[in-house]
Length: 129
Image (cartoon, rainbow, N blue to C red; front, top):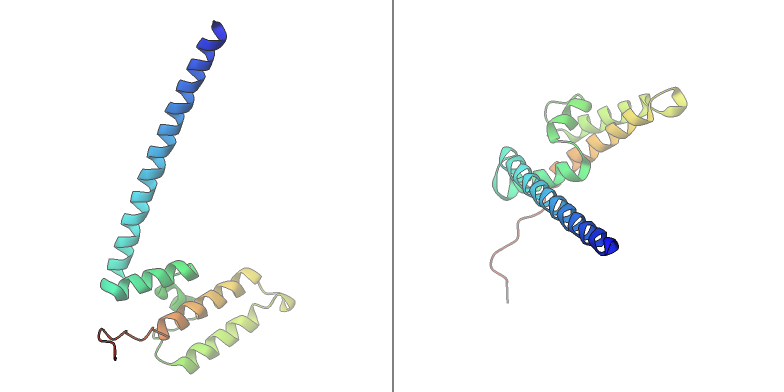
């Protein structure tokens, strides 16, 4: 009889634990969704804001952070961006005593700026038949 009581208590503990973990997971998902919506709104709202938030997530950095890493204020001059990238990439080469971490940050910054520059073309609502 004591084994059935112990099994009953063990089952109750498992059910209660599963419920607690499930609620915590659902709460975390809701918070993450709300945070991503706020990030999209801060980035400009609408489809453009959502695109920027997706780009931030893909590269792991915001456009502002990428501009700070490459020491540029505007992304309108691709030659300046490339020259800053080339210089910082070369300076941080491991063979020259640089940091692989910083070099990878420079690469991610360039990728983020490239993503911003190469915006997808808007789709036409009317299709030609």
